[in-house]
Length: 104
Image (cartoon, rainbow, N blue to C red; front, side):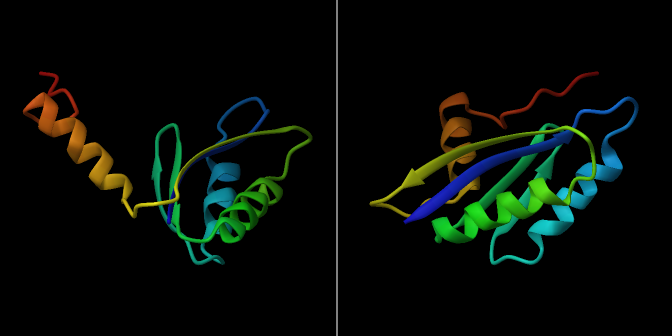
């Protein structure tokens, strides 16, 4: 089993959210999950659903704001093991190139 999740935790505040988002990302380090932060959220990979939900909860609670919005999307492949990078590679095979533009 492989769980690949997209987690976005953001305080509803004026100005930069980066300091509070950093607290949410740092909270993930206390759990047995792999993660990669992107500009729009964090990709989390684990084989343990309890660990995933606990990590997401910790990230949510780490943000210090009067209002916090959290979005969690989970791809739960129960019969196969697949990493997030493999999903991107499959798309790139169809494209015939990397799944990103090269602006000039």
